[in-house]
Structure formats: C-alpha cells, structure tokens
Amino acid sequence: MTYYIHAKKFFLQNTTENGGYLEVTDEGKFGDYFTEEDDKPTGKIVDYSDKFIAPGLVDTHIHGLVGDDVMNNSWKEFNEMSEGLLKAGVTSWLPTTLTASHEQLDEICKTIGDNQGKSTGAKIQGIHFEGPFYTEKHKGAQNPKYFRDPSISEFTEWQKSAKGMIKKISIAPERSGSVEFTKAVSQTGVTVALGHSDATFEQAKACVEAGATSFTHTYNGMSGLNHRAPGMVGAAMSMNYVDDELICDGHHVNPYAARTLVDKKTPEHVALITDCMSAGLMPDGDYVLGEFPVTVGDGQVRLQQEPHSLAGSILLLKDAIKNVVDWNIATDEESVTMGSHVPAKSCHIDDKCGAILPGRDADFIVLNDDMSLEETYLDGESRYQA
Image (cartoon, rainbow, N blue to C red; front, side, top):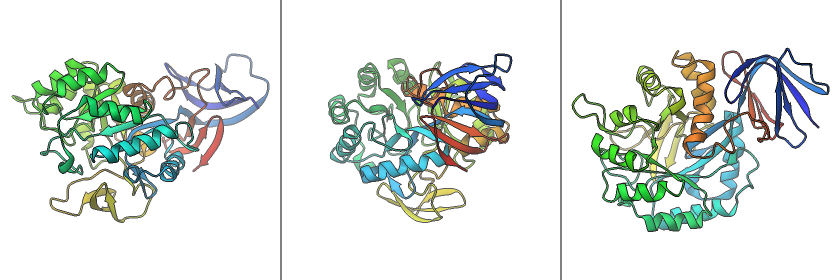
C-alpha cells in the first residue's frame, strides 16, 4: 500500500528539505516529494516529524560481520552479513575479498555471481577485490605470499565467474604492468583503486591518468605525504576527480587528518567505508582475518603477531556518519553524502543505490537529531528498529 513519510528533514539527491512528505509506492519504490506548502497528500501518513530521512547507507569496503567472513565463501554467511548490515543502516554493499590464490578468489566470484539478487537483507551490488596485486611494505593484513603483478587475463577470468559482478579492484601502482592493467580494466566500467602501496607520487599519478579513480582507505597502507615526495597520500589529496575511501573510527585516522582530507577533497569525493571484519557486531576476543589471527578490543582489530598492526575494523557505517558530524568535520547533509552517494558513485552503482529519487528502491534510514540510527527500511518495509 502506498504511504507518505512525514519527517523533520529529508536528505534528497540534490537538496536537503525541511519538513514535507515523501511518497513510498506499493511497489516499494520512492515516489514524489511534497513540501509543507503543497497540499497534504491523502492516504496513509507515517509520522517521523522529529526525525531525519536519509538514503540507505552503502558500504563498498567490508570483509565480514556477525562472525562471518567473505573469504569463507558461504552463501549462508553472505546472507547473514546482508541481514546484519541492516543494523548498521546499510542497505547496499560490496562484499570485499582479501588477497588469496586465484582459485579461492574465483570460487567466491562464482558464489556471488550465481546468487545475484537473492540476499534477503542489504543488497549485494557487486564485489570489491582488495588485492591481490599489492606490494609488501604496506601489506597490512594481506598475505604477501599471494602478491603478484596485475594480470588482465586473470581479472577477465574472475569477472566471467562473477557474471560481471566485480565493480572495483584495488592495486599497487608500482607493480609491473599496473598502468596497462588500469587502462584495460577501467575501460570495462570497473573502478580501479590504488592502495596497500609504497608507490611514489609519480607512479600513482600514472595510474590515475590511465583511469584509476579511487584510493583505498586513504592514509592507511600507503606511502605518506612529504613536502618533497608527496607519495600516495599526496596523490590521493591532489589528483582531480578521484574519490578517496576513509575509515572514520578514530583509530585508523586521526580526526584532524580526516578533516584535512575532507576539507581538501570536499565531501563529494570522500567515501566513508568501514573495512569491517567478521568481529563487527560481535563481542571482543580472538578472531581470524583472512589467514591471520587477530585480537579485538578497545574498538580496534590488531594482528596477534608483531608489530600488532591494525587489521580491518569493527566499525559500522552508521557510526562513521555520526563520527564525522561529532568531530565537526562535516554537516549532517555532508555526512550522509559521504556514506551513501559517494561510495555508490565511486563504484558505478549509483544507478541502483545511494540516493532518494523517484522510481528507485525505497531503501532508506531514519536518523535522530544526533545522527544516530533509529530505523532501517528496505523496499519500503521497516526491517530494523534500534
């Protein structure tokens, strides 16, 4: 049945509106928006007059949740993650792989490709390959035994198994053949991102000019900014029209460094991501990320082996959008943009998610004044209440 949401504020695609009514059709799609000055719509009114309505969040870099891991390659676990993500305000996501063997990654591609459209929670809009074309110095929790040079033929095989579902792949620009790989893959409509890399500014710039349009968890796992050698961070900050992933949990990036990036790039080019692993929405303790034992505590995930570096996170996207507001880095409107539209745009899935537009699936969240999550809707139906 068609109904109308009445709310304090609506974060629409191009404007933020105070008050008014948003139509949700009986097909579970967004309809029209009506201002307070328009005639009040006739029909069922769902009242959120002290709340904000925002598009469902889009997590384009997430490895696990609720004890489940993308690398386990279990459709049951993929679906459990989809269900769990509704508690994080996420309605669309890209399961993100870790560096692994060709065969293991191919099997994951087949599982997701064969089950398109079957998840019962947050919608799987594609796959994000984090690796395996990386270098060792900034390996993080990636296993260097699988690192290798970019291969167009290898990628093509994975994409065939995935039935076109790979939307993004992250590579290290200093690897041999990275520019040629970037040219070929970006021309197929897949986002090429740059990360886990000790590349020089010039090496990163060469990949950007070849078609790379994103930087993987900016600041983390990359050569830093020096006034004479700008490095990967300098490239992420200064290249035009690239979108920079950013983990805003307060552990991966100092809030003032996060502010510097957002100020320089503007919110239209910063994609909030979680890099969440299986311990998300789970108690503290010992877990495994990929093939590495990790310990979760104090809001952080760290490798058990020396030097105990950060390894993924337990951040939820609903908390990332709240953090950037609490840290006075962004307005409410800008934080919603960074948690929905920009991630979707950066992976070329913004035709399916990340905005409130007529005809789109009515995937949206209800936020309180302090930007905390109140409720998550999928296809116009309430699926989670805080």
